[in-house]
Length: 370
Ligand code: UD1
Ligand code: UDP
Image (tube, rainbow, N blue to C red; front, side):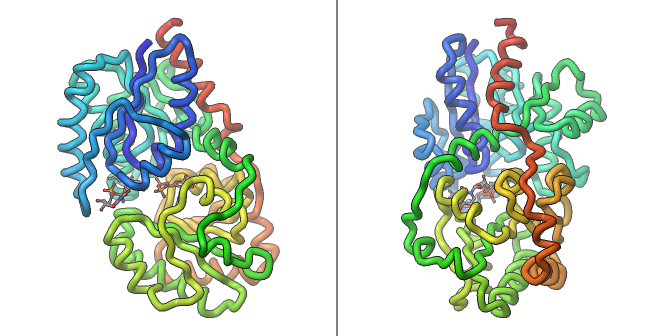
C-alpha cells in the first residue's frame, strides 16, 4: 500500500512525525511525504528535529496569508502531486486549512483519506476559527477516522459516520512527547540558560489563535503582564508565534517588561523541557492541552471553549476564557493557593500511552487487508 502523509504547520508536523517514521520503517508500506509548508520556519524546525525529508514541498507560505490564500494554493498544489503519485490513501491530521484542503484535493482525485486526530468538536462554528469547520468537513471527506478518545468516537457517531470506519488510537502527540521528553537535554537558548527555575516560578505562555487576534489577545497579555509585575518570584517566558499580528500585540503589551521574556519559537525538544520545568502554562494551543497532563503541569486555557474536555476532566486543564480579570484571578489563585495548584498538577493522561502510531498502522493494514 502506498500511503502519502500530508501536513503543513508546526503542530501537524509534531503529531505526524512519529507516524511517518513508522510508515517509513514498515516493509508493507510505501511511504510518501508531502508538506504544504503553510508554515515555513516553524515547520522546518520539526522536520529537522525528526530528520524528515519531504518528497514534495509546496512551499505555499506567504506573510500574513489569509485562509482563502492557503486554500487556493494547497488545492492547486496538491492536484499534480496526487495525479503523479496516485497513493492508495492520504493521511491528514487535525484541523488546519492544510488538513481540510488536502482532504478535498484527494477527494477530487477519488483517493481515499485517513483522518488522524478525528472527532474533536466544540460545536461552535467560529470557535476555534476556522478549525472547527475544518475538522467537520475533513470528517465528512474521510474514509477512515483515527479518533484519540471514545468521546471523539461518540462525536463522529452522532454525525452518522459509520462505526466500522472509526478506530480509537490515542493521540500521536503522546508518541512524539515521549520520544523527546525521555532524552537528556541542556538548554542552548541564552534566555533559558539564565532563568532561575529553582528560585523563581516560571510561567510559559503561548498564544496565536485567529479568534484571539486583536482585542482578546490584548486582554490576555495584559492579565499576564499584571501577574508578572505583581509577583517578584514570577518570570514569564513566551516563545512568540511568527504571525506578525501576534508579534505586534506581544511587543506592544510586553515590550518594556524585564519579567516577560519574548523569545523566538523553540524547537520541540527545548520547548518540552521548558514546559516540564515551568510552574504553570497559559496558552490557547490545542496540542499543549494534550501534552501538559503527561507532564503534570497546570494549564490555563485562554479560550472561550475547548474541544479537549478530557484534559479538563483529568484535572490538569482549566478553561480561563479571554477576560483580563478572570485570567488574572485564576493565575493569582494558582500562585497563592497551594491546594488549588496541587489539585491541577496531576499527571494522568487521557490521550493514550504513546502507542497511537502503532494502532494507526495496524488499522491501515486491516483496512487494506494486508
Ligand atoms: C495555523 C492554523 C492553526 C494552527 C496553527 C498552529 C489554519 C487556518 N490555521 O494558524 O489551526 O493552530 O497554524 O501554529 O490552518 N508565519 C511565519 N513563519 C512560520 C509560520 C507562520 O512567518 O513558520 C507567519 C506568516 O506571516 C503567516 C502567519 O504567520 O502568514 C500565519 O500563519 P497561518 O498558518 O496562516 O496561521 P496560524 O495562526 O499559524
Ligand atoms: N511548541 C514548540 N515550540 C514552541 C511552542 C510550541 O515546539 O515554541 C509545540 C507545543 O509543544 C505543541 C505544538 O508546538 O506540541 C503546538 O503548536 P501551536 O501552538 O502552534 O498549535 P496548536 O497546538 O494550537 O494547534
